[in-house]
Length: 256
Ligand code: 13P
Image (tube, rainbow, N blue to C red; front, side):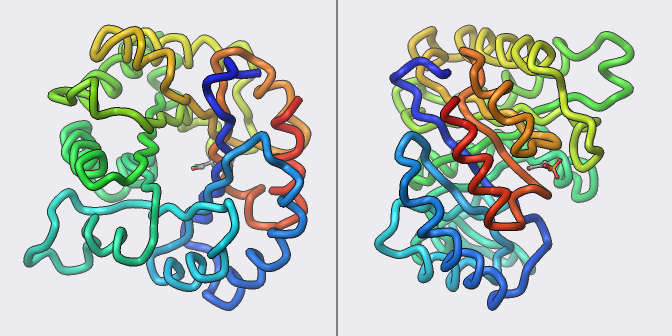
C-alpha cells in the first residue's frame, strides 16, 4: 500500500487500439463499475483522435484523460504533432511522456523527454514519465545505470517547486506485452532506484510525494501483489485495460 499521502493511480494505456465508438462504449460501461473505487485515481490514455469523445464521455466523473504523447512546443510547423495547448483546450489533464514504444520506434530520447516534461509542467498537465530497461540491459547488469540516467536526464533543469503532480512509470521493456511481469521484488527494487534518483535530482520531499507506477503485463491476478508494496503507487496497464471488466478488476485489486 502506498504511503497515505500518495494516492494510488491506475492508468489505461490503450495504445493504437479502439475506434471512437468503441472507446465511448468502454467509458459508458466502465463508469458504473468504477464508481465504487474511490481509493484510486483513474486515467484513460486513448489515441489522439479519440480524445474529444473520451473527454466528453467521462465528463462529470472522476475519470481523467491523458494523451499518449505530445510535442513540447505550443505551436509551429510540425506536421502530425499535437501541442500541449491543443490538449488543454480539449480538457485533457494528463500526458504520457517517453513511453518505451515511442523511444523504440519514434526516436524519443532522454532529451526530448526532458523538453516534454518541462512543457507539461508549465502547462499544468500531469506528466506520466515512462522509464525502463531493455532485456539486454538487465542481463548486462545495467538496470540501475539506465534507470538513473533516464530519470536524471528527464528531471534536468526542473524546478523542484514546480513538480507537484509528477508521476513516473517504471515499465521494464521486457515485460511489456510479453506476459512476463516483473516480480514484485524486481519492481520494488527498480522503484526504489528511481525514487532515490528523484531525491538526488530534485529533493527528498519531491521523491517522497512522487507517484511511481509499475507497467508491464499487469493483470487482475498480479495487481494486488504489486500494489501492496510501499514504493509501488499504482499501475500503467496496456492489454488488460482494453476490456472494462478486467480493467475494473485491476482497479479493485489495487486497493489490496
Ligand atoms: P502491457 O500491459 O500490455 O504489457 O503494456 C504495458 C504498457 O506498455 C503500458 O504503457
